[in-house]
Image 1 (cartoon, rainbow over the protein chains, first blue to last red):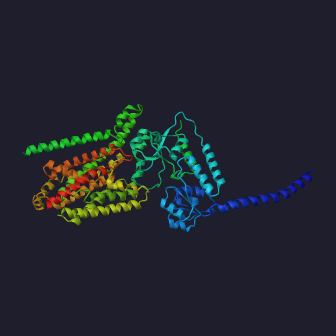
Image 2 (spheres, chains in turn purple, orange):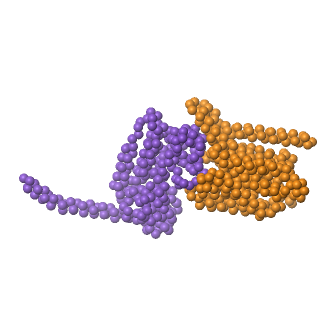
Image 3 (cartoon, chains in turn cyan, green):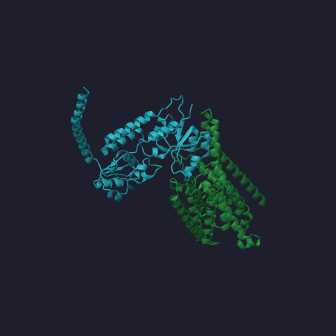
Length: 290
Length: 335
């Protein structure tokens, strides 16, 4: 019985193996043809497209990333950006890479975009993300451009799982917080920080005070909103300016009863990407225990 | 006649002082949104006292006191310089002492000196101020005509501003470049009591030194030789005033940036009121300068704008036409 069985197995193996090989080769041919049509010399000209490109593309697809992507305070992917040549979004520079896809943001110079398009280059504009939905859209859009749809879907899935894993204890009263940046800017409705605050169990007092987008908030107004916690994403630690000194105003310390301003690094949200989940986790952790 | 005049002087002093106190109190009550103090009194019955106290003591009080000190300094220094150089256009703004102070402050603040040693900020401001003033004085010469003085002042001001702009571009902080406007136009917004303590000693010392020069300045109106024969050491008077101005302007500008035209306009407005005596003009101009800056700062808070207008914008809008008028008048008197 056992002998027949083993023979049977071996036989199966012999039949299956060539079949498996043909299947693999067919699959390989399919992906190969997909690769043939997907871009192979992608140049990203903007910090935010850099991030998603570095997450989604195969290393061989990337021809160049923007110079800012090496800056660890604002670039989440700074480490993996190191192996690629950088560009400064200047036309002559871009031409040298002979790109078959240029990723840009509406913040890039419009003349660069028009000029490259006029020369027949494919330029894709990726809008900056202001919500987590925007982030998902951008990931999927870039993934499709790169011929990496599956990788994009997987990234979105992981991001959703990570978001779901952040446990927010239901509280009787949600604590009120807000963002305060050097030069006195805050994040109101329609910003990533606003969504992150709300998803991590905070009230964003800036939005509730009617502030939309990224706007200046008067110090007195901030005090009257009475946040129990103030967050910032100041970068360039160790440097000094009047803008940065504002965060050390004694009134702020008195207001939050000595609780220092919590810094949540810029790299998590200067560009919308899956790293937003880490920022939300940090915000959730900062909530006062009741 | 003389007694009547001195009574007028006392009345003038009291009136201006009362006006200053009144303005300071309304500055404490009026915020960026009109009448929030009154609004606040009717809302948030819990905790309101503590938040009101916080806004009053930590935000508005330093702002009012810094505006008063800086305004008085500029008015006083304008009067002193105009008396010393006997030149209606000699002011901290035009003779480089304000932009020199701003340059010193920029060096100290953006390159990490003042974060290690807080007093480095006003001290650097004082040195910058003194250096610029002495340079203009050497360039223009002792009995400079109005034109020479302005030209020397323009040269030093431009150089100081160019260096400030260069340094802010080179500064390690990414926020530095955007602060050029602040140093050029000045602002008293969002200052803290710490800033007040930083600027206070130099300012007060400078004032004392300057007010001690009143007699010398009065004598100087009779000409340098007559003043010398009256026992006024001209060299000493000159250096005492230069150092006093450097102390006061250096401290004030390193906290507020260079606020223009107060030093020019206020002494001119006050001069007829004190019978053209430079010694008397000093105190009156200090009061007038404080009043003018407090008024400008109040206006800045009440003008509705998305981000607050810099107070120096307002003093320049008022001051620049006045400056033009002075030039036109001096040209008429020359021809």
